[in-house]
Amino acid sequence: MRLAELGQADRDEPARILAVCNSCRYCEGVCAVFPAMELRREFGRGDLDYLANLCHDCGACYQDCQYAPPHEFAVNVPANFARLRAQSYAEYAWPGALAGLFRRNSAAIAAIAVLAMAGFLLGFAAAHDSEALFARDDHFYRLMPHAAMAWLFGLAFAYALLAMAMSLRNFWRGIDGGAVRPIMLSHAVRDAASLHYLDGGGGGCVNSDRPMRGGDSGDHRRLFHHLTFYGFLLCFASTSVATLYHYMLGWEAPYRWFDLPVLLGTAGGLGLVVGTAGLAMAKRWRDPVLRGGTGLGIPFLAMLGLTAASGLLLLALRGTSAMGLLLALHLGLVFALFITLPYGKFVHGFFRLASLVKYAGERH
Ligand code: SF4
Ligand code: SF4
Image (cartoon, rainbow, N blue to C red; front, side, top):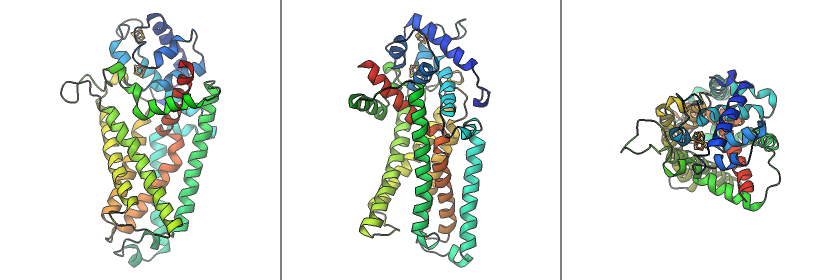
């Protein structure tokens, strides 16, 4: 079922399943969802959104469940929660008028990326003659001044942060999050940073009934997720260090291979390429009954992976005549990534962290 087809019935089905789980309680040691569920007798919209975003989609409760299909109770927590999570991203999106981007996610993200890359290519072609465009040097700012880059990408990123902060505020209100204490934040950040609840109660994340290697449960999603998440942070750190170099020390790009921005960006880019490819493969190998089929994962992974790959290619070929073309493609992808962050899978990190914060409060 696509996200566009979700309706009220999709809250009725998870609520029915949780009523079964609340009587059964076999999975209460598997993850945070079940202890949180046991604090409730009824499951309204906020409860369901909270529990769905607390779920890390490890799949263990489906594998453990004696009431999974073909049993008539047809309990499938991971797939129902995946659809509910995707629905919650759209319902709490800011501004609400752009929530439709979640429902046509692949087409919207692909169109924005193509338009952004075309925009940079046409802009470069209009502002420079072909000799400058294909010159063999690595000075990016010859093609686009640093101030123009800083303003354009600074504004795009500031918009993304504002939109995600407003979505998070809507979500927090929707799940009746309440006051936040420092101890709640520290527990939530620790659990999120280690993906504590992706271990399926110790057995590992279930990717498929076909083990990836060595007969284990295929718990490689944690590794690939870490590579993606920390790769993203390293790329962010690289940009931040380069900005400090430029404005505080007067050291302008291009930087040498062993300079900190290049080292951080290279490590982060490699992490993103390997991590996103691994997560995409894990999705492909995942047992189809565990999939929510929302269509949000692959567009986001593709954008992250392509942006990182284009950055690494630009770094490798920056002294060649391909630099101008690669710079336009990379900047187009980065711009598209920034402005689509609030309308894709990226928001799952904020909603899950908020749910972990609420869970830490309930636990204490
Ligand atoms: S998922 Fe199945 S086994 Fe686990 S608590 Fe729910 S009904 Fe029980
Ligand atoms: S985190 Fe895993 S065990 Fe817990 S509800 Fe989600 S899929 Fe089930």
